[in-house]
Length: 284
Image (cartoon, rainbow, N blue to C red; front, side):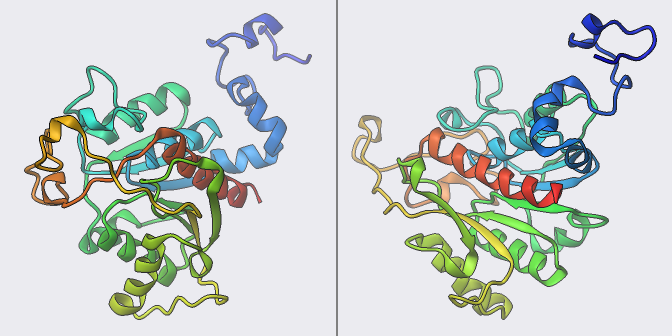
């Protein structure tokens, strides 16, 4: 092993090894051996935006940080709710009611101390697109729940030529082995993808037809969605929103007529597949 002056091999194996000893810090040793050092260094110089910090986006963001991505912008308006616990990385005791992006940013800085992690507590809206997508954007991961916001973000990225991978419906599925990727034009089964294609045409004039790729990679499931089962504390009244920001006026669970079930091993798979799509594109 070759070590820099005044640094013993033992020192370089510790958490406190100097960040400047090598360009590739040993926390990313396995990443460098898989991606190659030049590939890892491209990731370290990349700027990736992740929209949505829920069951998909939180896993995508952490996968990117653990892959060595050097600049991450996390966009979400929401606060942690107790009902997020089964599928979202930030949802733990002590975090309920705190902003998701702030909790995730703190977590990712512990994973990758030299990375720049920028939390943006905001609901994506049409008027925010120019500001949020300003400057160099190397890749976008869309994990937004709101279909209107999702469609606008996709249309904006297509129009501007910004690479994007988009999560389709991850709730109401139980089998992660059915998760697939395809151009948005060519997904199968997923009802959300079908609605997104229609709205891309109706709202933004972008035709999305089978066999004619538009450059949006979709992460989707071939599994038929599972209808939600009743829970005893519904008391026959259906879903009741208990989240601390239910009166935010933008995207509140109080306005949702139906809440599907979900599992971390499916939503997390969606997020990690999305991160893989971005990483493979960025390392070249």
